[in-house]
Image (cartoon, rainbow, N blue to C red):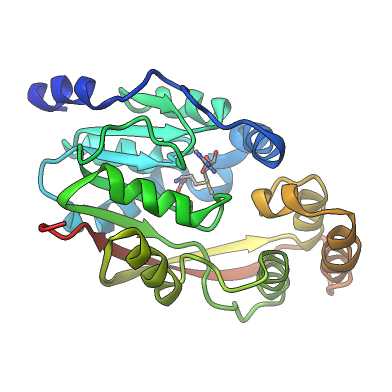
Length: 282
Ligand SMILES: C[S@@+](CC[C@H](N)C(=O)[O-])C[C@H]1O[C@@H](n2cnc3c(N)ncnc32)[C@H](O)[C@@H]1O
């Protein structure tokens, strides 16, 4: 981080770490679920290898040299990869255990709810949200906060999660489960995000590319993790008894009924790199 940015960063915080963290009900349950998955998160998702590959796709779309606030930074791999390339970064997340790992990688982390960012209005050049828009309780609140803290002309890069129905059976069951629990399409699908962003005062400039991940999932492992609420966390933490009985349990059973449920099934995932901007005149 260059020194000017470092000093300026201190002026940006409207409150101290964790101030106003909304930790009630479903949010509290989701936070503790993220705490529980933090230890295995990098092994599961590719750690710094993924962080560096994805950061290289993000960097060309950021305001050069400006602070990057990584919203829902998780273990901080993307922020760390950007820091390696000289970007001033700060990682924000509400999970203590995720942040503990991010803190080992990046110089500045803050515990905060992304729906209530402890950042001054108009203070940020760049925001990053990787696999986060579809996991927060309110994408609308996240985008409204993003619009508030971005300076005019500032950029927000969103990397979506899986926004199109995959062709493999495990991917399809997971996608259908999420769609049923959410009651609609993923909020980070570009056409949906464009609408949410517009209501918040941000412009979607376009989809700048896609990121491919080839991985493998063992159906019984996925079923176990769904039952423990260790994936699709915020949706499962909000699911009531009826949703659990009518939607979650059948999806778990469908996973266990797949052929060879103890063997890895290949998955090909595509995430999209979406660039938003706060108009210079707003
Ligand atoms: C799927 S992980 C993505 C982590 C990281 N961006 C990455 O790509 O590896 C989602 C992260 O968002 C965080 N998160 C979810 N809801 C949040 C909220 N309302 N406020 C702050 N962090 C949140 C979780 O703790 C978790 O670390």
